[in-house]
Image (cartoon, rainbow, N blue to C red; front, side, top):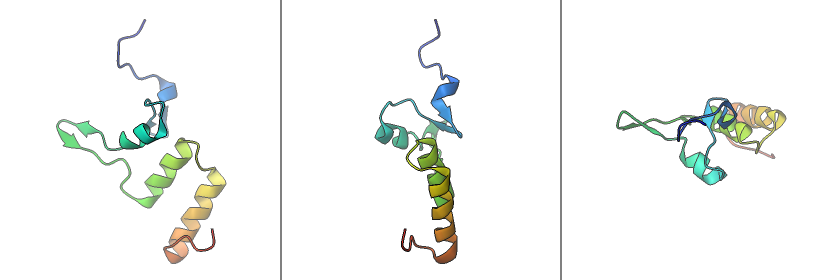
Length: 79
């Protein structure tokens, strides 16, 4: 039996921790506090897309499409 608070590999996806069993709580956990200082895990659009993919809300194809849109014209265009 493990200690309370032990993180299992299945809770970590692409560097993001999913332990809240609710995506809204897991999203809030993308700004953890370490050593008394908040740490931003989603500093840019690319990191946000990685989180959405890790949360299984977007496919790899969707992420690639959104990245191309963002790079090409800085808005989502017709997507």
